[in-house]
Amino acid sequence: MNEYRIVKLTEKPEIKEKAAKWFHEKWGVPLEAYLDSMEAALNEDPIQEWYLCLDGEKIIAGAGVIENDFHDRKDLTPNVCAVYTEEQYRGKGIAGKLLDFVVADNKEKRISPIYLLTDHTNFYERYGWEYLCMAQGDGESDMSRIYIHK
Image 1 (cartoon, rainbow, N blue to C red):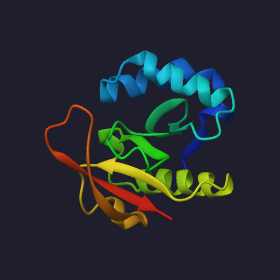
Image 2 (image 1 turned 90 degrees about the horizontal axis):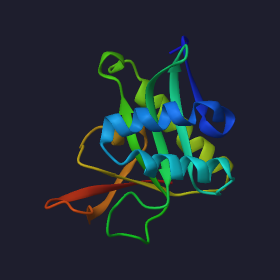
Image 3 (image 1 turned 180 degrees about the vertical axis):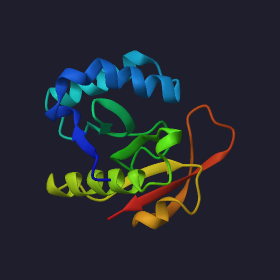
C-alpha cells in the first residue's frame, strides 16, 4: 500500500465537498448528511471524523466515524460507517489498513470501544473486530450484525 495514503478530513479540509459527493455516490445517503457530519468534524466534534484513502488525489476508499450508524442500539456509540473501497482496489489490504487507522486514531483520542453495523460476515473479524449482537437498521426489514473493536 506504499503508493496510497490515508488522511483524516480534519487534516485535509479542502476535499470536504469531493469526499461528501464520493460517499453519497457510494451509499445513497443524502449529500447534505455527509456535508453536515463533515462540517461537525471540522468544527472539532469530539466523535465525528472522516477518513479517506487516496491514490494521488483520487479517493479510492473511505470510512467515517459518527455517533450512530442508523440503527436501534443508540447505546452503542460511536460507529464506524460508510466503509467502502473502489472495486478495482479491492483485495489489496486497503480496507484493513483503513480500519486499523480508524481504530488507532480513535484510541489516540481515548475513544474505545467503537462499533460497526454490517451485513458482512468473515470480513471484519480479520481486522480485530468481534461480533457483539444483532441490531435493527433504520428502515431495514432484516437485522444486521454489530461488531465491536476494543
